[in-house]
Length: 253
Ligand code: PGA
Image (cartoon, rainbow, N blue to C red; front, side):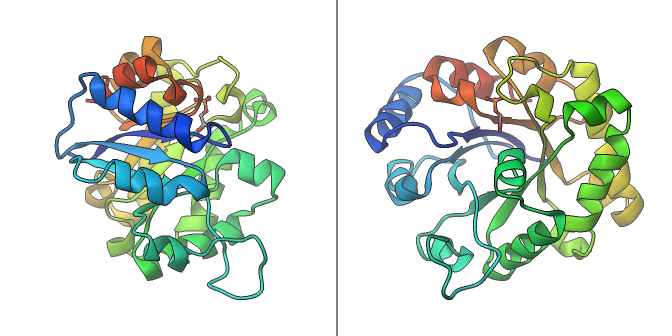
């Protein structure tokens, strides 16, 4: 079975103390993880080391950075390299979130570079894709998402893409309270898997975890995660509330 993942995306929220308290509260509640079920905390850069220390020894719990530079090192003030993340033992990096694409003009080509640097240093990308409302209304979401995958990922080898993690996040569902229906999520996830299978074969496509993101909460997680091609979620708002996120973790297949 491919990995089922509940990934928290804290975005630019919480102080370090609030983040630590959130994790303490979460660990007090009962959630069940196993080799196939994983929790990842996507925290702001300044807290990565502290949160990594906090989760040390918790099986199947990891930390993710929310971004990295597309350059390896050098005179890029304010940027954070993959090598730096590796040096503080961070295993995951969220890449290409729609907020980064929209507010920081990240392109598919630039994301391909970031993906490559992650592989070079052994970090695992959580690669985000997804369409805007106008694209959904025009009915061209399938080809749009396909293009994002092709331009950023299709240069990868079979070995690299095996076990990869993708997050499908329709932009119109992020932070809006408007979730894609479980049918809409399943339809796109199946499409993504089909596109991956056409390039890499069914066996490889079946190893790729495809998370859904966009207003996932306690009340809808079970139904969305229950879809055959949905392998968990990338969760913003609801990941900041321990009681919500516990239910979301326990909704993983
Ligand atoms: P949301 O955010 O759960 O608050 O909609 C999801 C995301 O942007 O990753």
